[in-house]
Amino acid sequence: MQFVTPRMFETIMANTVPLIPSYFKYAQRLYGDTINKLTLSTDHPCDDLERILLDYEESKKTVGKIRKSIKAQHRYEIRLKQLLQYI
Image (cartoon, rainbow, N blue to C red; front, side, top):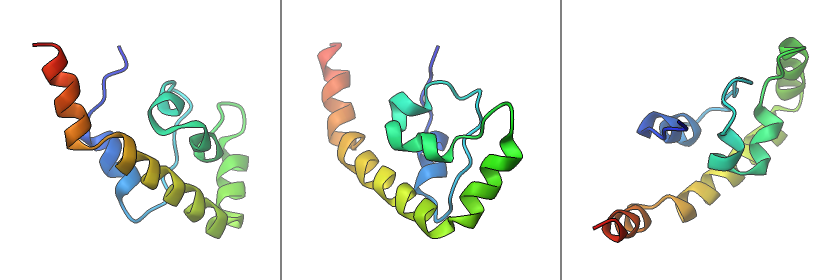
């Protein structure tokens, strides 16, 4: 059903580098293509984790780009306008 909850934004907006599980199929739609760099594969998640940790500074930059995108696209004003369209 691809529900979006506040927790999905809290995880990205926290001062961390999140690891996105492979079963979160609509993460790309929600966060953008950049999230793929932080998504763990089903085949070799340990390799993905190692890659993310070895290039941690780049991973932090990736999350920073995603945060900027979220702030621009998922503001309260935008959501309120969308909700008002249903009325």
